[in-house]
Image (tube, rainbow, N blue to C red; front, side):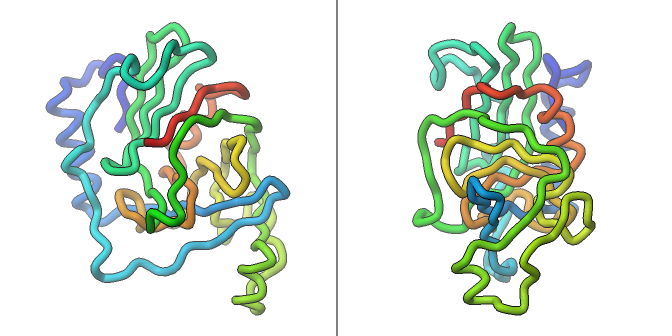
Length: 203
């Protein structure tokens, strides 16, 4: 479900596969995590929360970045898609995502990858813990209950991450408290491509 100069796929076949994945009911959560490792968990999926595959299409990097130095990640909140370009522009990837549930929780603009974390630890923020006192204080990385999945790209903004998930229901939906969620196989691939200093733009 990703492109590497369309990776031998035709664009039509690729988009058809992506649309089929959305239609199959597979989706994933995104969570907002603070710089100290705490995370705000999003609520359950409302029956009226819909996926959006209509704008899931490849883009060019030039309208969004001055260069692809250190690589570039574009997150399109409207189409619920993440685009990645390598620094030398030989690799282009396109992934479906989950995005923030509301405009209040949505942050747009330029940031960058500041850390790459394998098996990130999850902790609820104090406000989440106050609202949900029965939640655990910590879920260690590698646990199937860890909402951050196996990999996370920490951004320069507090509470914002690009990460995987073990719960695939929310991909393609407005379902997070700020972060961008990917399927675990997609975050694994993106994690291997991105580096500390990779540019990130949310639009």
